[in-house]
Amino acid sequence: MRVPLVICSKVLLQPDPFLNELTSMFEKSTEKGSVWVTFKRSSLKSKVQRNKMKTAGQAIDYRCLIRATYGNKTISTSVGAKEHQRFQASYATVLKAHMTALKKRERKDKKKTAEKKKGGAKKAKTDPMVVA
Image 1 (cartoon, rainbow, N blue to C red):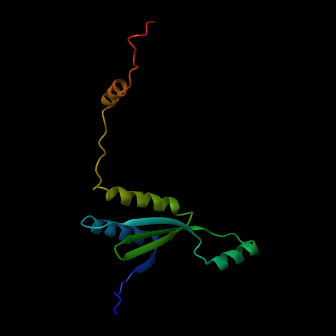
Image 2 (image 1 turned 90 degrees about the horizontal axis):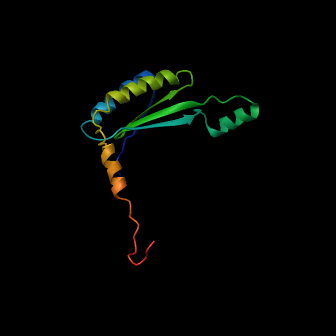
Image 3 (image 1 turned 90 degrees about the vertical axis):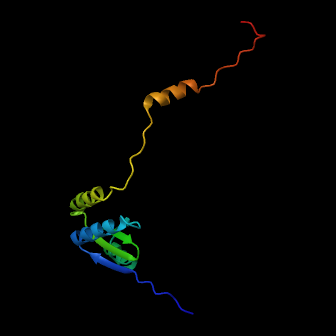
């Protein structure tokens, strides 16, 4: 029995090369496919190391682990609290540049919806036999 070989390359990059690679992933995905981006809080240490640091009274430095996947290719980067603002601004620029395929939402006219609400209300039934 043959098992298909699936190569899943994971690379931990610095933030700027990560954004460059993410840009190329978005450009490839315009023809076919999707790019998945995930953000996760991480200390980049194992659970045993974190427990040792807790018992020793040391502060654990949490970082933001960002992963992007397109097909079989996965890239990731780790961003600290000090550089998070700059990274988010650059990431937002990349997203805005590559969200051209999104369709604008069709908005309903406010007047039409107001008329439908007024006309759509049930009228109270009046009994012809009852005289007020």
